[in-house]
Amino acid sequence: MVSFRRRQKTVETYVRPCYNGCMKKRELLFAGTVLAVAGAFFLVQRVASLTDGEETVTVYQEKEQIAVYSLREEREETIYGADGSMNRLVIRGGEAWIEDADCPDRLCVKQGRISRNGQAVTCLPHKLVITVESGKETELDGVTR
Image 1: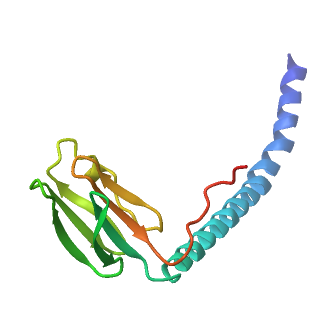
Image 2: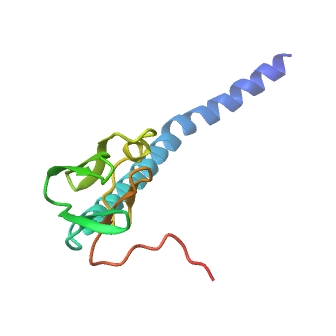
């Protein structure tokens, strides 16, 4: 039993100093580098998407275009349907969303904010579609054959 304890102490004396000193510094340096590269990539993508062109919010009701607003102008619009339905559209900070609606399920309110080309918010009970459109082409999600 004495020899087992000596062997255990010997292993701990060699492994512990190397792991505590060398590996943690390398791991932190690697993690920091990965985070910095990811952050830089995110910022470049965000700045590129903001400066690509004039993006607009287009409102369609019953398949007819009823309004076009700039995504850069802050505004609140109340959209009334032919049957007296109501949706409140908010455009602020480069994003658009439906803040309030009198439809029974209110799924249009829960869909959230849209800001990129091709994104849309729909309210099926009111036959309302709000899309973000711009002069640039929509980014591909994938390629199929």
